[in-house]
Amino acid sequence: MSTAVAEATAPEAEESEVQSFLVTFIVRRFDPEVDEEPRWVDYDVELYSTDRVLDALHKIKWEVDGSLSFRRSCAHGICGSDAMRINGRNRLACKTLIKDLDISQPIYVEAIKGLPLEKDLIVDMEPFFASYREVQPFLQPSSPTTPGKERTQSIKDRAIFDDTTKCILCAACTSSCPVFWTDGQYFGPAAIVNAHRFIFDSRDDAANVRLDILNDKEGVWRCRTTFNCSEACPRGIEVTKAIAEVKRAVLRGGR
Image (cartoon, rainbow, N blue to C red; front, side):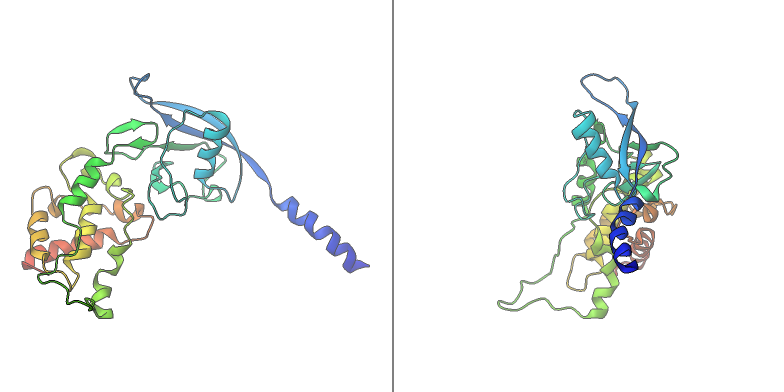
């Protein structure tokens, strides 16, 4: 009898544990066709603790205000398209859980800094990708691959640059950098991270070309080692460490 009662009440107990909360979001809105300056707009959204900030933005757009604009794609922290400032910190909206934020206070959401604002939470990513392309982020071997063969690499050699292969080009690191905010010519952390990935690849033969590109007044020497970039990276890349390794390679004259 007691077992039957337990079985009957267990689902009810489980259901009672799942509670929703009314959370206030204050979103920095900007419509270039209407606004001269960005403005803050409040939204009250009912959410569960396991929801993400991206879920909240979807609710606002689908149920409250369809004019809200933001980027998102995979919603699993892989595409990097939904990087934004949440309570003053660069994060991916799809990886930021409501339970990890203080919902007793309003949650502030705005576009990442340092890149031209296009609309609401959307920025122009072209300056970011221009720097990325400039460091030549692709494998450049000096000889063609032998037909039917692969360019093999030891586990030890791969480990040297494994961390920087994780970059998803979300721009969270670059747009968290105070130098990047004030110097539009600085390559930024993400470009240097992607240069690192090939500079230290034993299969690549263009390391010195990239080091020459980064040995510039707007290259690695503009980094002030504030660690904002490492803190902002949603993939946990040790960005500041990678930049320091590139600096040492420049001083050595090669990897």
